[in-house]
Every structure is written in structure tokens, then in C-alpha cells.
Image (cartoon, rainbow, N blue to C red; front, side, top):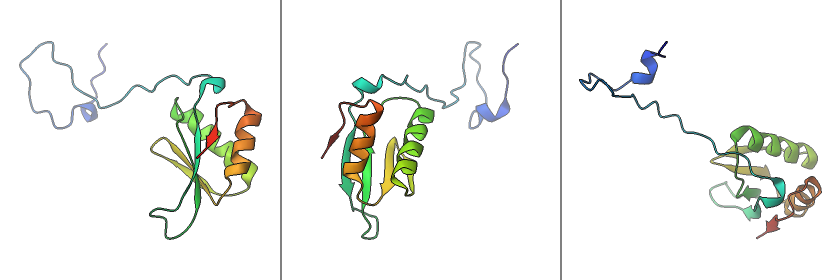
Length: 114
């Protein structure tokens, strides 16, 4: 049975092509690569943050669930807040050294500070 959800077909009026497939806009997430192969970069960022400093972790390749799990681990171990936006982990405050130690302890051996 075909999946025929009208919400997936928004902005399409009519098609005469019998082989036409609606674009649902869902993107496939890439598989999470091994921790040893991740090239994570840790940097201090102050731009567009009202003068506040944040530790920014970039370069993660994998699913959003794994990224959120890593962010939760870092926020818990550092004892601060943070978020995940656009594939980047944002940790409030300057915790570059601590984050580097945590990542290396978890097996992310190619992590580096910028």
C-alpha cells in the first residue's frame, strides 16, 4: 500500500506524469563514523553572543541523535548549559581544555583546539 499523506504533498497542485514522486524534503542522515576517526575542532567563540564566551565544537559527522548524546555528555561533565545548532555543539563558557580532556577520554583521539 502506498503512503499517501497529503502533508507530504504541500505546494503541488497536479501532475499528469504517472511516475511522478513527490519531494518530501526529508534528508537522509549520514552514518556516525567511529570515534577514532572523528575530526572534532574546539574553539572559543564570542561573535553574535552579546559578549558572552562559548566553547564551540564542530566537525562531528553522524546522526543528530548521536550529536545530541555527545552534547548532553559534555554539558553534564562541564556542569553548564549549552545547545546543538546546525551540527555544532555550543557549551556556555570557556571550557576548551576540559572539553578536550573529556573528548579524548571518550575515545575521540583526533580532537584538537583552535
